[in-house]
Image (cartoon, rainbow, N blue to C red; front, side):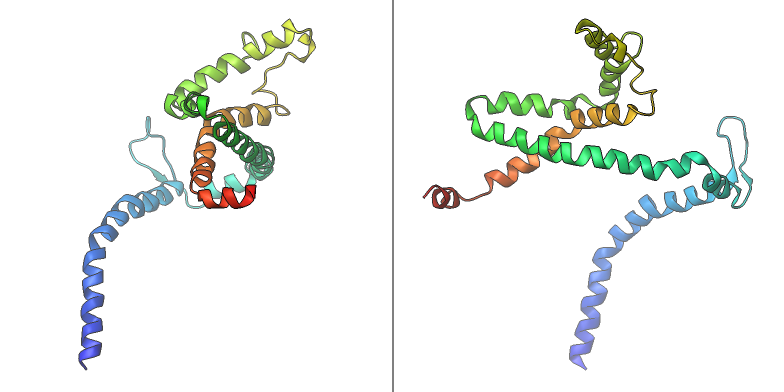
Length: 198
């Protein structure tokens, strides 16, 4: 039937257009995924071993029995519980400030977004200076205001490491959240503001 033949022709044409993208995705995602899975079944040191040694599921079993592996979900939960409310609230607050004070909005927006441009390696160096136990600015500040007993290695202490990590991530990502909220705020039609003011 002509209708069915036309459908087959359109389907073949669609697959022909999709083929380059599918081949590219298979090469870019499929091969590395399969290679990583294969390496997870071997014992292989890139520096010392000439060839991987197949060990089967031994690596997976060692991972499942590791105490660090079982701590990972609770650490992720603590991080998410601390980070998400602060990220959303801080991004919304920064958006409101930028929108409410248009005179300084460009300067403020640049200052908030600057950590994204600076990069993670520079961020790591900066926060090493801040959180270091021996010469960190946070401990020096605490000592200067009379709270020297709170002096600690912020990243090395399991109780305070999540707070330090959340602080770094907030500093790094607050600008992205602000831009997303700002784009949403600027897309609201002026008529809605006029209706709300009435």
